[in-house]
Amino acid sequence: MKRKLISITILVLLVATVSLTQAATTLMTIGRSPFHMPPLTTADDLISMVQAKQADVRVGFAKAGQADLGEAFIAQLPAAEIQTLDFQKGSYFEWMLFKKKGNGAVRLAKDVTWANPKPFKGFKFDIENAGMKYTFVVPLGCGNIALMGATQLPPPPVAVVTPANQPPECGMTVSSVRAFCGEIITVDASASSDPDGDITRMTIAFLDDQGQLVSEKVVDGSGLQADVAFPCGASSLKVTVTDNMGLSVTSPECTVAIASKKKFNFLADLGYYRQFDPAHHVFGRVGMEYKFTENFGVLGLIGVAPHVDGIDGETAFLADILAEYTFSRYFVDLGIGGWITDGDDDIDAEDSQLDVIAAIGARVYGEPDKFNASVFFEVRSGVDEFDEIIDYGRFGLGVRFRF
Image (cartoon, rainbow, N blue to C red):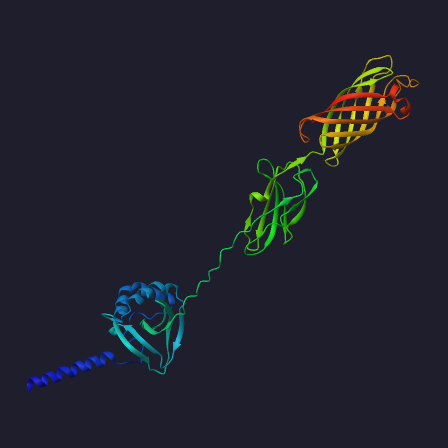
């Protein structure tokens, strides 16, 4: 009988212990069993408390079965948004950490409800861990750490994978790759395309033989065609196209070798005139050529024609202006010139006169835009001596050097 009574007594004690452990806690006052003293006043006080009591915080969270949450709590608190609020009667907390009378080991109270009609002030903040947002409250008067509740965090946004922008493809034609400085040429990049968008810009760059930029023109819009002035000193032209996403590319198809032609060339003539009257002259002239187009130019020449033999004629000073038309390697000249002497003006073979000049020739050495040499046949006659051109006209052969 005695043994049975002892067993019943032990069972009652166990049930009472379990009941006390699981029983809800009704809280009426703040500060009787503080986790920290003195009372907290600022959020910095709270952060300092947790940093100083990390060991106790870890023990408390372990007793609550949430050790990993304790690590997140310690790590995230300094950056958390901490509010100071009044908590009214009926405020509920899943659990609260405290120390009995402020001393000893950390203890855990579950299902805590504030039952006092008078509210208490506390800090409120959120800590995130493992996809959950945990809301904590810490009363200012005791520093007890209380879990108010937890909610599921929204799933992270699904990353939208944008397809990589495909580069445009460049295609180009140029109306002329050899032109005079300042001459307008047309650059057409309308053959360019973009597989996943539109081409919105074309950049035309003229480069010298060292790859340095000579001039540049940017054309915005979908019209990939432009008229540009051909600059002096450029040896290549490169087009770059840009798509609507800002990606720019060029290609070998959009790079072309070019050559700028000089409008001015220095000239020197050496030759021989025969007048059948008779008279023999050698002549030399120097001057400049100005090219209006690749085929048409004007020559201005001055020189001297010493009389070297024959019973007629005098040494003459020459001042000639010629229009020249070029085709392939051949050319034709037509112009007027001054044959100026100190001879007798009453003698047709010796007087000064205004000549009409015609010539035909061919380039025999070099390229048009570089040093070259040509041979020519020239006839000059005074404007009032056409009917006597056989006697008093001067028929010449010469060599012309262009520099």
